[in-house]
Image (tube, rainbow, N blue to C red):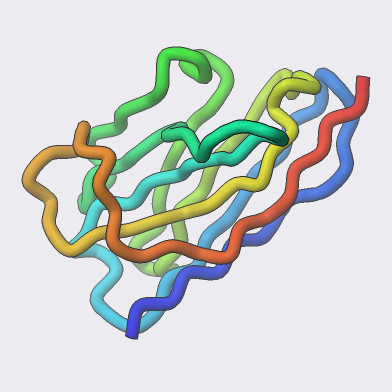
Length: 123
């Protein structure tokens, strides 16, 4: 059973940085792509970033390029999302996700989700 547990969220001020973590368990972490999504207040869940199983390829939503960095440590079964220069509009619940196939890093189809971690950015 795949389990994903996010952490690292909190209340921060605009301009701060934050690193979110997601620990995976239940299968061989290093074999599968990982992604981050977010759900902002009153909006649908949206894609943020993805990273290939080996960590060599990444993919970002246009809205976060330059401020968000996804990375992974396969030895720790952990994927990270570094967020710099936080803005109030980054306020959201952030979710990590993984999937059963690695056919396309650009695919938005994911099979397993964490519970999410809340990030609140004050102005």
